[in-house]
Length: 209
Image (cartoon, rainbow, N blue to C red; front, top):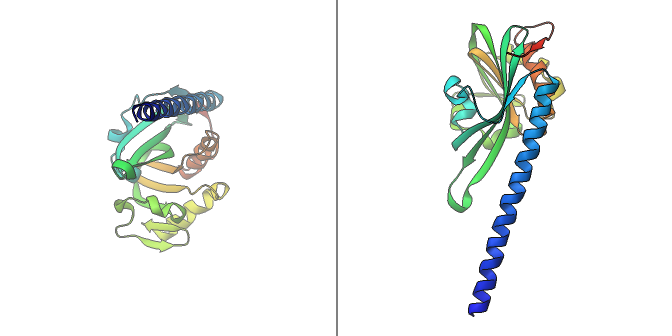
């Protein structure tokens, strides 16, 4: 029995070590791909969060999902004159053996003037919608909508090239955000120009800050 117990313990420890190694490899690849994306778009990059983004954008509804939220892999620069932040956001849902980690790709562009609040949560990601995204909303097409249907249709038309990505949209005061369940870093190459269009810019010019 003692031999069986020791063998089982050794197996558990080995499995845990392999799991940690796999996670480290996956994270390293993500850092490399995000850094390459940032460099290719003439943006700066940090594996950590130099802006304290969860405090900077307290109204971003995604930040209210689950618990233990964390921002990482932040690419930052400007779209014409507007600051843009592209980053990974991870949070946990549930506890104990039912705990699940969920990851999102997020882009936020700050605008010089205030915007009417608007939230368009993609129904393809409905299972992950936090309570704040479900209160006082109406179902319009593929969206849970809080805000103007006319504005929603206009913004929807601007993100047709992202129609297969479960993209959600939020306007919040002086910023516009796009977010979706995390995919490859290449998704940001589509998301950033889309937010630029939503910010009303006719031409894109990315410059480091």
